[in-house]
Length: 349
Image 1 (cartoon, rainbow, N blue to C red):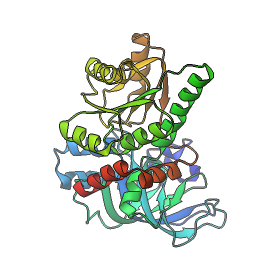
Image 2 (image 1 turned 60 degrees about the horizontal axis):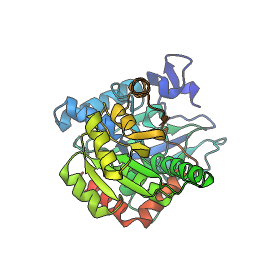
Image 3 (image 1 turned 90 degrees about the horizontal axis):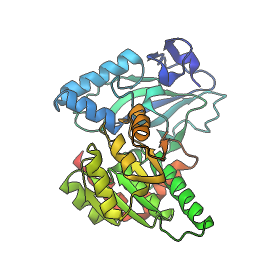
Image 4 (image 1 turned 30 degrees about the vertical axis):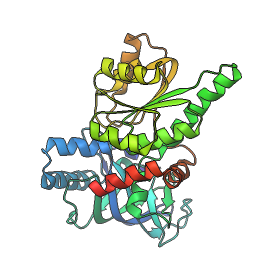
């Protein structure tokens, strides 16, 4: 679990630690990765960019400072990190990860618990995109997860997909459970799904996964017209609605108007804080809200649901579901709309 890498405070797991030991010498159950690219999670990158007014040099300097100070990439404001791709450089003799020296891999665990050292000062990164080309090394533990990069996809595209692969897998599971429940009860009413932030990475994959899992009607909610046009072109949602997810009444109205009823399943994929109450208000009693955004305040979600007397189940998208990488990559390969959104995002970056 990496306890031996925790420098301070003693006794906590690596994700909760303030500082990790990123010594390149590995224990028998560890793996060292030569890092080629980081993918900062959306909430973290947005916070850093807004803090520095879009000044890429200042963003780059802060990321370097965080990694050098903490031995890992964990934004001290959002608490989140991201993931990386690289090449396996050394494998401990007792590592259970089934990796081989030379494998090109993406880590499927957060940078917030991954010992990391940057060697090139991020000289090839302008600080203006979530994907960060770099040279360095990272350490994986026995309980870490990594996927060998597929040969048929560009590494940057694979990285973008694998960064959010927990979202579609959990969405599919929850939607399928709602569908099965209706079928057992003999209720022909279709299951409705709302994805807040539907044009983004996790949002587009979640819309595709919901449809595959049997959702009868879906709405993708986006904040601006350009994203509305992009999502309409992708054809992933039955309806695309414009709303500010931070306005609870506007969000709830947009979802209910689009679906005709509140959503049975609401998936929150936005990277800004303050969207909890709107998601709860947009969800039917007996429904489920899945929070995938690292900008979520779970205290606000719980207390907001209580204050609204909302009988909803709220799930934390923890980023791991068995088989999640295969699910996400499969959707990318088989859904042209998903692939088009991802490729457009990478081109813009």
